[in-house]
Amino acid sequence: MASSKVRVRNPKGIHVRPAGLIVSSIKDYEGKVEVVGREGKRASLQSVLSLLSLGLAEGDEVTVEVDGPDAEKVCEELSELFARHFDFPQQ
Image (cartoon, rainbow, N blue to C red; front, side, top):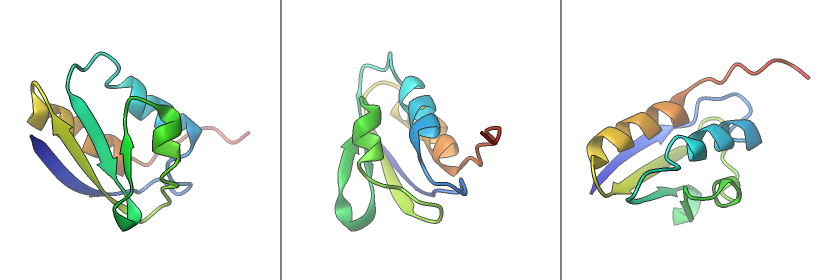
């Protein structure tokens, strides 16, 4: 098992687009992946809605937990995504 604390850096937090990218990045992963947000609330990364339910805003600290093959590598990759500043075009 691997875990990592990371701060959300996207100015608009983790909304639908970044959540979709994060969840799709591990769609074929055979292990268990969860994120622990504010007040210890947990979400599975098998579902965009589960991740969105955490209501993650810029500056929030989360813990990424990965249990399965290549856990360290997957945890590092996910941590980078949570810390990423997504530059989506303005609508």
